[in-house]
Image (cartoon, rainbow over all chains, first blue to last red; front, side, top):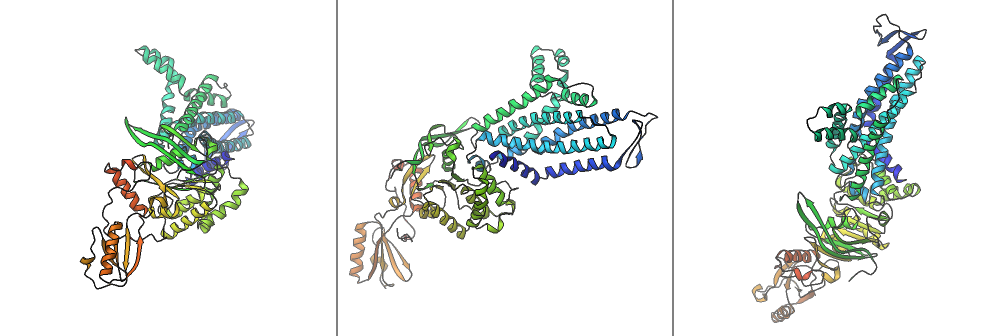
Length: 276
Length: 340
């Protein structure tokens, strides 16, 4: 199984660069805080008191329903994880293709009787398993701790985690394309960040296009909106989903997945043609 | 000599690189055939196109024009690279791997089964002298150790075609001999070996046939024996260190040196040899040895490349030609130590 060998290779690289260890330490710390430092006093299905590290949090005389509290907490966590997690995941995997393409290294891989597409896609799969395992560990742990502490089981939180992973995959596809084209780690990290940030205001593409002086500029804005991932809409959908206030919009999700898929296919095609 | 049923074949091969609008022609009409079980040496100065040629032969780079076949297939076809070992020049294994995990990874990519790797990895580590260092991170390996590991990785799928780009680069003399022995062993098993090396003495000892590439073109090609066959140069050894006026032994083009208590005179033609013998006999000197001298590969290489640079060696391309305008040697040349 050549694919398995390359997935293992990706994990070894992540282990050696302490990416996995760093993520694991942060995740464990966060979970320990939830387990030991966060105390929730639940009375008749409502949250009577909250303390963090032994310090009581102000309740302002309210006794919100525990269901609402859990969903709000999870939605906040999912929203933060969406922004932070994608950034961290891009940072953790940004060097994969540039390291593979290093002079003297790439020959060792490509001279084997393994297709170039197989090598690139297996490394992609390795990165996906790596990030998925980290997400599942962190989110699964948070989900379990909160659910056991409160008795509120909100499976939509898990669906949200899946959505975050899908967005990351889209950016990973783009990162692979940048990596194949440039063989540069800084560019492979910075350009996905730039796309993430640029695509945020494009959620208001109609209003921005209407404010444009020229038709060309308006078309550029509309084009960018349709081509780039829909970071803002998906972020909003994730929060709504966890709060139980709505489902996932299909169009932003499909176009975001399409962006990543097209980038990944382009990366494979270019990698196949690349002289090393 | 031309290979019948070639394992490696290049026909009218050209490769151009474009860099910011500038076109660099790295290979220019290379024709090459290497037969099964042959050890073939690729020689050339820095930038001659050796590594590019090797990469094109392996399918790592596509030719601009021309045709390449590796065991009858396009080398970019994955199946053509089965049981093909490659040791790239200046290779860099990922530093996070250990010797053992590197062999596992590249063995798996070569399609070797887990069971076979279980026995082959320790055997290969032992073979290249890294038995006790297999679990060390590669970041702690010296250059020579990395080179030996590279050779082990190239041998992991028991290849029947082996491409080696500077295999002894950074390796000490003992390691070099070890690598040479491994290659000779591989040749004994019928492995076709394609070597690119600057160490001409190593190439001369290891290869059956060589080609010299210069500015992307094959300028000379032939068997080692053909290229270094005795020409018109002879060495005459006079017994002892006779007290003779050396001027009286001076023949046109001759060089005289004292070696191990004997006088050795090297002459450049059959006529000069006979004239020297006449004079030595006239001086009643004892002639201990008369031997024709072979050129070594270094001489052939330098002569060919210098000739090409002077623009006088164009006719040597692709055929056996006498070396043009050999510069006078400052020292007499000794016969080859292996008796060739």
